[in-house]
Amino acid sequence: MYQSEYPCSADDLYTYHSREGALQRLLPPWEKNTLISKQGNISPGSRVKLKMYAGPFPFYFQALHIEDKPGIMFRDIQEKGPFSSWSHSHFFHNTERGSLLEDRIEYTLPAHRFLPSFVKNHVEKKLTGSFRHRQRTLTADIALHQQCSQIPLKILITGASGVLGKRLIPLLRTGGHTIYTLVRRRPYPNKNEIFWDPETGFLSKNDLPELDGVIHLAGEPIGLKRWTIESKRRVFESRVKGTKLLTHTLATLSKPPKVLLSASAVGYYGDCQDRNIDETEPAGKDFISTVCHQWEEAAQPARQAGIRTVFLRMGVSMTPAGGALKRILSTSPLGFIRYFGSGNQYISWISDDDLISAMLHVLTCSSLEGPVNMAAPEPVTNRELMRVLAKITGRPLLFPLPARLFQSMYGQMAREIILSGCSVSSKKLQDSGFHFRHPNLETTLRNLLGFI
Image (cartoon, rainbow, N blue to C red; front, top):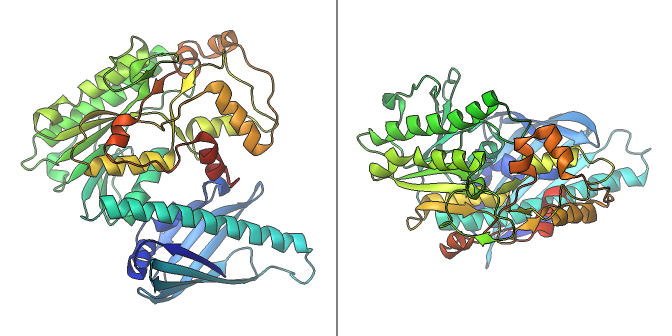
């Protein structure tokens, strides 16, 4: 049995668990678990199928919900999976300080009488780690929703299939918000999907519902390989053309949304070395800076239509599910490169939970407009990042890699992404009332990688 307390009523805690997105929010990021399918929510007859891992070996777990008493409890059992039996009951209780969640898990392992004790200890350790992660996430999510989700909103999202979009949507849904997504394929029925094609300039305003806000994240990945003329064209046009199409369409609506969040990046400023800079800094001169500048300029139709427009100048999002951290971890099974180039280039980073939480905060904070740096308050150098990763994981620091090696392999991309640095201030975001869950790099990485 595991018990955890939360700063809300038992009814509110139950409601969070009953909403779409709750399961994705509460899965530990270090476990690499993936939601394969979901039918229903937590009512009897609902099913969930997960792809999970025991070390490097994948397996599937399918749960069936068999009991539900709204505001009081719900129970699920294993329908298919690695256990001989599994039952998980959630009980919700009001307390003087809020609510208490009581988890009762009963399970048996195959051939459990013959298994060594360390196997069961390993299972118990994984369960305890999962519950602790859930408690941290739930506590922070509840506080965020109490501040930002008192009024349910209708929100349109582009780039929903990307790593960031997949993390953002569950958070918004657990706050009771209704989500619509723009897709470039045939929309699935009853999924609130709307077709658009930025390449041909197609987006019908008649397909759009009445919206409270729009979060625009779509864009070609930037830092995955050596740039060519064609790849740079795709990077540029996927951002500028898509933003122009979206904002022009929103501006022509009879009732436009009140707010647009449009993605950008700290690459807007170029290589700033060790200077800590704020949103008043002009754009840099390199390719990424030009892309970010034109990306933001493309949103002018929304601003001219009176839509509160915020440019999310995002730092490096820290998540083992994708981006820079996933690439570093996947290429460092024996140890971590000590540093890249000089190692002194600054990285303005942010945990993915803080990034998506800041988006919801910005969406509902009417005082914020224009560019906002979306980065943790403690930027670090490349050298420091690798040192902290080595410390947490217990892997050694290996030899450094010289700048000329990266330049020979990746050319301009290496100079602007890997070897360039930028230290940005998050004061504007913090002054608006946003509180970081993970302001410190080491604490962030311990939470993400399961070392806490």
